[in-house]
Length: 364
Image (cartoon, rainbow, N blue to C red; front, top):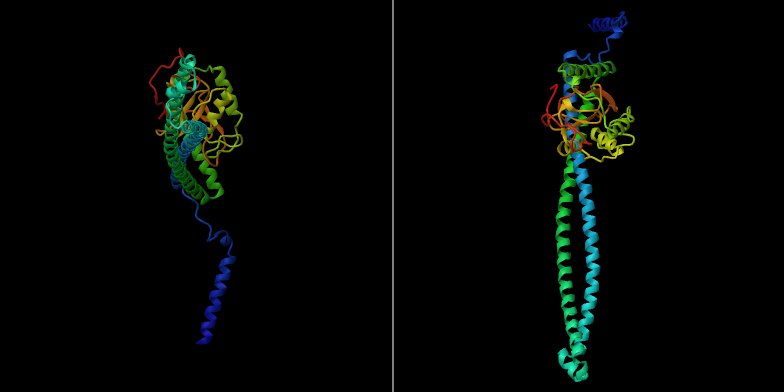
């Protein structure tokens, strides 16, 4: 019985070895993941796009909170500077008040008019009475200055306290937004990390194809036929700066000179053209003059998505230059490759055409 068991075991081992030596068997790597089906790859592309979209929205929230934090820090510093100056003046006034009290004490509280009558001749009385009156006015002025300075100090203290609380609130918002950015980028990168090199290449092709389809639909609307191709002098400078950054990496929260996020690129480009603009895409959308899509010209900024979370600079011929997302570089792509919310013009001036409806959408 033991001998039969040994023969069976040996036979099984030979079969197993024989199986490994069968031509083609080595190609079946049991630990390699099965290729991702094309339909699933398209789902992954959409998942990654959604995650990066959310990360970009959080990035703009982070940028806004960071900008607010900087503004409030500077405001707090100005308040503290004014408070220090008021405190210094308070010390001077206290010193003067102390001298006044000591002088009054040495006079034993004797009325000024009686002192003048006792110490001087009648010929000097009117002159000395006027001097005494001016002295009393000076005392009253000193007391009033003390009171006003104390009120200012109290006001500065209250304002500083309010600004400090606002600063702390903005710092918390900034931290929350930063965490949201990091979480979503990590999730997107984790999804991408599961893919093989060939699948990643296919993913890029799917991204490019989706952008091409959106751009084609936008161009088919005929919008390009109505767009003015003339840029202003400042617009040309902004375009030159933005296109000079082509190939540089996207980095959230960055505004150059080595890396940029989307609004970091547009804000720095227009700053280089001599027209400082808001830092974030949401603030650019809120605060800059809006232009109908059919009226836009090179240098204008196209704001994307319903939450104004992305921005690119129109450079003509239906294209924009923009910083797309983490893992990508600054590039030129079709202006209609994403959902357009509207167009803003940093160098808009009185008398220039701004026809059409603000926030007009084309190529949705």
